Image (tube, rainbow, N blue to C red; front, side, top):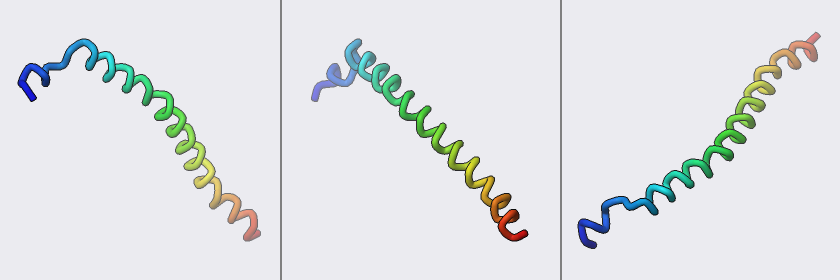
Length: 53
């Protein structure tokens, strides 16, 4: 592999940009799932307290 093969061209920059944009949506979805899971987990002690009464 020659040195000039390692220099990023416009195609590589476009691929990196597209990949980053393609990861934004799944990241947002996973962040929402994580927040929902944490909220539900935080409510469990309340439910356990109600059952204990």
